[in-house]
Length: 113
Length: 115
Image (tube, rainbow over the protein chains, first blue to last red):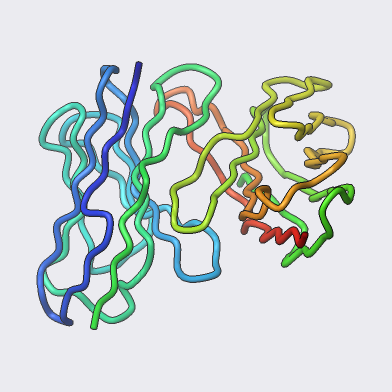
């Protein structure tokens, strides 16, 4: 069966520090991968999605970046965090073909102080 | 482009009350429709889905029917429990041909059920 792992679960980082959040998927090949951010009390904002190794599409301009060095690994990074980067970050995967639907990771609560 | 509009929350109900959370959508073609649930501090979980018109998705006592004529996918439950307290997201899949499926989410509806 397919599983998705996301870590760390919580993170407190100072303004200006770097960020690296990792997401890995097991039990499937060539998944579509996604990073979402959820600010407190608000909906989901799609940040990045990837349909293959090295293929990254950005939905919103920001100081975050994403990389996909392996088929089932998706990394969210920043060189210098801002206060406004605080939020709940969710990774998700979906099959390339099919009727859609995502499986989400358990999320990372990031607080920038 | 695709969009999903959800009933604004928060919604507060007493245990055993009837629940409806409205969801309407705008899309080209024939999207699949989903309801996700997010319990406090957790990621989203798929609650139910419907892939074509008149399909009814159901799970854990929740139901939603894909209504193409009204472009709606309202979530219902006959008798809610305290454990149903969560945020509920309606979503649609555009099933893009060249890039695989992508989901468009509504803003989410916070449900609180009091004992």
